[in-house]
Length: 309
Image 1: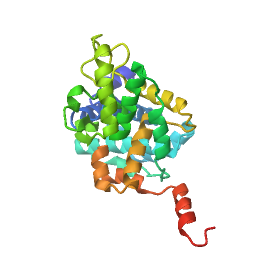
Image 2 (image 1 turned 120 degrees about the vertical axis):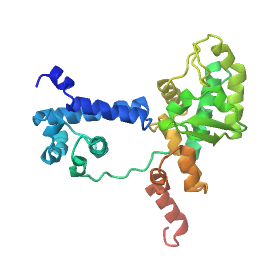
Image 3 (image 1 turned 90 degrees about the vertical axis):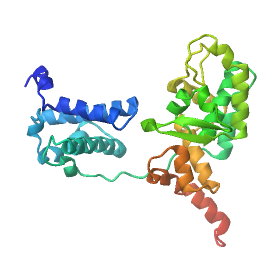
């Protein structure tokens, strides 16, 4: 079937993929970035199905799904996590088709579930975080902004997208900030005094000058030209601070989020509280932070076991 004809067919794969993506956007409120990731994964699955001669939903059979993991493997080396993500997207699509009455059963249950190795989140030590936060030196406007941003990220565990989109109105709370998380879910997170001081300095001495350029819409963190600081801009701030702090480890905005959670739990915070602070929908997502690293195990063993030395 020609591509144009396929797109027009009411039971074409492309039509069904588009319907699922609309469902994710409207009914589940997923972010544009997440929906785009689903789109890429399902486009690859649709490519596989076309290789099998499947262009309409009525052609789908269990045998088609069974070969998808091997097809992925033949296409190039993918990490177990990448394969698991693609299979998860496919399962969700098939479940949607079944629930909408488009297919007689949920074919996604036929997909294998490969085991993925659990990985501990990469967190910085408290000392490394302190070096990172102190890296933007001086009284220049960029340094003042960078210190405020880094303190904000570590104090709140905010995602880069949440920090980028946070507005001055979100700070209109005593000692806290309102963050707008995934799925349009808001949460209120306390701000420690270090973060509050850094934000106050930035809001008084820097932000009004940049905001006067008229390119922002009330966002807290701006660039030198007055526009909202993007997620990529936040990444660049962190990379520059890591370089200035001489930290020889990979660091991203999510590293501070991991460090925020890890340090809270190490300090005795309740898991459910950390779940709320991070904005996780399920506590199982937060539980990954409770596992002890091999380094920590060795340190505790060396200090506690009478025959360790």
